[in-house]
Structure formats: C-alpha cells, structure tokens
Image 1 (cartoon, rainbow, N blue to C red):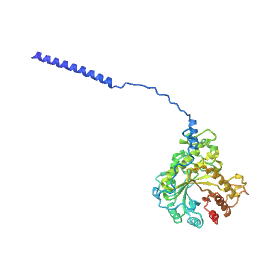
Image 2 (spheres, one colour):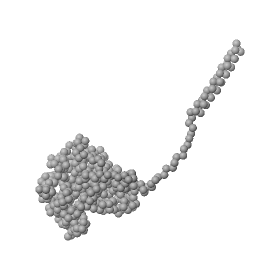
Image 3 (tube, rainbow, N blue to C red):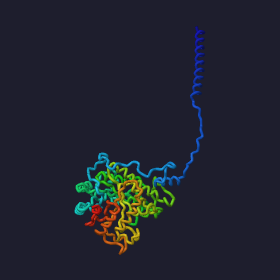
Image 4 (cartoon, rainbow, N blue to C red):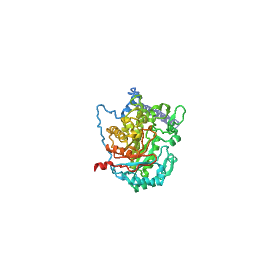
Amino acid sequence: MTNSNNKRKAYALSLLAISTLILSACNQETKETTEPTSQYYTLPQITAQYDAQEVQDFNSRRNQGQTNRYENLVIPNQLILRQPDNLPSSLFYDSGIEIAYPADGVKGIYLTAENVANAEDFNYLVDFVNRTDLNAMVIDFKDDYGNIISVNESDNPTVQSNTSAYLDYKEVLKVLEENNIYPIARIVTFKDHLYATEFPEHSFHDVYTGEIWEDGNGARFINPFSQEVWDYTLDIAIEAAKMGFKDIQFDYVRFPEGFESFEDTLDYDLGRFSAYQSDDPENYGEERVIAITQFLAYAKEQLAPYGVDVSADVFGYTAVAGNSPDVRGIGQNFARMAEEVDAISAMIYPSHWGTEFFGILYPDLNPFETIDEYMYSEESALANVQNDVISRPWIQDFTDMYSNPDGAWQYYGVEEVQEQVDALTKHGVNEFLLWNAAGVYTEGVDYTPYEETAQ
C-alpha cells in the first residue's frame, strides 16, 4: 500500500513539473510578442525663418495696413460688413434715460463739475442751450487729476476709492432728459495723478531718481501700454454708460506731449507692445500709435453692450502732420483713431496754432481763415478712412491772452465764435463742441447758419 502511494506522488510531481514548463514557455512567448520594439527617429532641425527685428517690422506694417498675407492677393479697400445703424434697443443695457441723438447733429458746450454742482450756473446753462440751437453738454465724469465725480455702483475698489461722490449724475441726467439735451461723459484717460500715485508700476519713472515722472505742471500720466490701465478706464466708462450718458468721450487719450524727446529718460513697461518697436526712423514710436488705436478699439468693444457712442479728443495738429515723429511721440494718428470711434473731436482753437501756421501770420486774429485751412487738412486725413466717423471739432469760446504775444491775440465774442462756426459750415461740418474752461459762453451766436443758407 505504501509503495502504491509513493508511485502516485511521483506521478503528480511529474505532471506539476511538466505544467510549469508549459506555462513558462507560453508566458515567454506572450512577452516576446506583446512587448513593443523601441524605435528612434531623428527629427529635422527647426530654425526661425525671420529674426526678431523682421517680426517687429512685419507687425508694424500689418498694423498700418501695408501687408498682404498672400502674395499677389489684392484686398478691396472697402468694408465687407457694416453694423446696422438702428439695432433693436432690447439688445442693449437699459439705463432708463431716453435721449435721442440730435437730428441735426451734436452741438454742445463743456461743463465742469463745479458748473453742474452750482444750481444757478447749471440752470442758466440748461436755459442757454434751450434758447439756442445747441443741444448737447459735455460733462466731466473723470477729471484730469483722476477724480471720478459721481457716486456710482462699480464693484472695482479702486474706482470707489477715487470717487469724490461730488455729485449724483443720475439726477443730473433726469434734468437733461426733461430738456432733451444730449449728454456726453468726458473721461480724462491717461492723465491721472491719483492712479499713478496708487499704482506706480503703471506709470512712468525717472531713470535717474526712480521717482514717478511729472510734466512741467506737476501732472502725472499712467501707461497706455498697460492692460490694467485700460480695464480701469473702461470700468469707469461703463459706469457712465449705465447711468445714461449717450456718448463716452475719451480725452488725453495719448502719451505726454513731447514723449519722443525724453522717453530715454523714463523707465516703463511696454508689455506686449514691445513687439511693435522698430529702429526704422520712419516707424520709430509706432508702438505708441498702435497702443492708442487699439485702446479705442477695445473701448468700443467693451462699451458695445451699453448702446453708447465712443468719441475721442485729439490734437488738431495730428490731422495736419500725418505720421510725423512728434505725432508718433504722443501716439495720436488721426486717421487710424478715426477708424475706431463714432466721432472724432479735433481741438482746433485758433489761439493754439503758432505764428504763421497755415501761412496765417496770427491765427488767433483770423478765426475763419484758420478753421477753414485746418479743415482742408482734416478732409485729406479722413479721405481713406472707411469708418463712418463724424467730425465734431472743439472750437474756441474763450479769450487766450497767454499763448501769443501782445498784438497777436484778441478778445473772443460773437463775431469770433461765429466765424469758426461759419468756417465749419463751409466744409459741411454741422457738429461741434464749444470749449470754455469756466463754462461761460457767448450769447448771440447763430449755431445753424447752414439753415439760412439752405433757405
């Protein structure tokens, strides 16, 4: 019996050994057939076709419309799509203020916050507009120190900290609505002492002292290359639009005057606009032009849901000087800015043109001739602009006894203001804004001489 058991054990051990050998062989075969074979490839070397300077030059030409993506492709010099003039009101934010765009064009006056706050002044100016063919008011919403005048509902803490709450423009807008006076919110854009002081990283610094740069009048500017600055400005503009202002007017939408002459003494961040820098003298400073132009395009886009127009104040000189170095210095290219806004307001005060400008010995003494000559330059600057931009110049209703020597200036009254309006009328321009820093305007001017001519 013992011998029989031993035979069974030996048989079982033999089967186990054979099974182990078979399984081992199968596993080895499976491993050999399933493991991938490693293969290595040598990839071709990639080298840049263009150096950094060529890329910058291309970006510059592209933004000036001087490039085609495909060789021999001719792009028609006209708009392919155009936004309808009258979109349904349901598409836009409802401020509750209903004031239509003036049928015969905007003709307005400028008011300071003090003019609005003083009930006697404000009521007089409302009556003045009602008694004339004027129909609009430009009111400071953010002044040139950075103060935001009116209480507002912004959730931006910096907007709130810089709000003086001097006035409640909601109540003011109700008065303008009752009198059918078109409201324009003036927003001083890149001249801002408060923001520059609070956020010095978004300003300009003296390379020698490290201090925030100030101009000769002690004014501080914020950096137009900064996206944070753009967004802060638009947060303010949106509050104005939500209140019921129908036009957002950006003033000081530029770099400091003469920037090209002292930029090497400043430290500041160009951000993404460094890609547009060029050593080509014909394009030097192009990055500033692109920054200002793109800011206006961005503003137009961000404000679109609120159904407001966007306008910009610009030096009249830029329409005359074209692409000159000092124009690129401040970043204001008249024609390219005109492509991005609903209205462009050139500041063309006769007293501000130098001696013999336009061939006129003393422009301040010749308001009609000065405005007339300027308008030829503006017409030329706008000739190839595809946008249906409105020309709405700032004209002079103040006496300037400081810009010119004795004998080269005069007191401005009915005749001098009238001559400017008449000159604009000669060129078919029926929109304009009157500037007087104190909010004091001349009685007795005919603001619609073209109606008499038509009769």
